[in-house]
Length: 436
Image 1: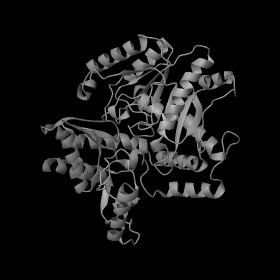
Image 2: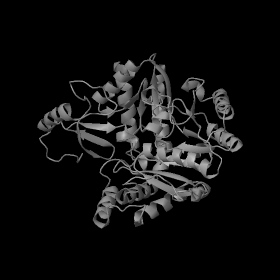
Image 3: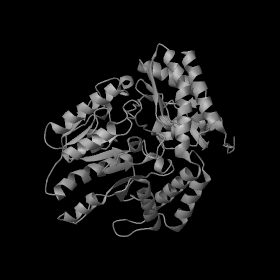
Image 4: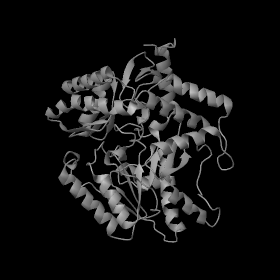
């Protein structure tokens, strides 16, 4: 390993934890006097990170599920440094810069035919806000106002106000009035039963009722894989059914690829598993590898052109100061180069098979209800959240960082992981389960 930088690691950890206890408010974490109990990380390389005590971990969380190319990748570091020296950013509402056009062109080349117009923002939540604004304004521009959105009750699209409104997860409950109507479809079966022909039929029927009963929706907005909602693999053919349903009702189909996009599921985008073309696609996380904040929304020329009818500015009334940041664009271009050169999408499919095969024997344990996966994301569903927490803690004690969503434990390693890393991940997780 070459992650050491000569720090006095024990002293660094003590000071870091004291700073955390006194000054830091960690998101999505209990508030207590003892402070955050996770590792204090100081460096990373490849698919491993090192904490302030000098201990190494295999990162099976991909940082915030966005470390597609791993840590300290020389091509990504060089891209950021070059662009910082040239031009860090410029306001895209009054001008442009070279990297934004290049990355927009690259994204258009990755999308199905017809999807080629891209808006850049800073986070998945912002991409969600933009997508909803665009969907609503599209119908207003056509002089056929629609505002209802159909989503998954267990879907997750971010934590801004509109993004939380789209979700039925209890942690995303709104703190004020609902800004527009949302119909939230609950899965009619458990995740294990959902991946069957019967599950597809039941879920399709539930969406049909949601879309066709009531005023015509502006859009159907779904993830290709329910991430925060339990690491749920959707039945094959569902997105095709939703595409047909949107065509019947006129609704726009919005695919949230913030988590799934850029190789995570073994395809460049999750919707490719069903071979469909959405009307809008939101993206973030893996697009910049976690090196810089970056997100995007790509849509059709028809949707884009409708904004010429806007009575005030003849365009989209939405944007952010650092949206399409030049350094982020340069890093995203480097990520796409690395993914292509190292064939990371193909690797995700192959290594994902190895990961899932290695974890499937855990189904024999009486506390495990399901093991599922798609590409380089695998979910071990436990009967109890407490048991899942114990499994995550046990894996960490063995040097593997896993992610927990309620009773579900998720393995989400960087796409640059190799076969030996997958074997280590499987072995350590299995040993942690045996210890419990």
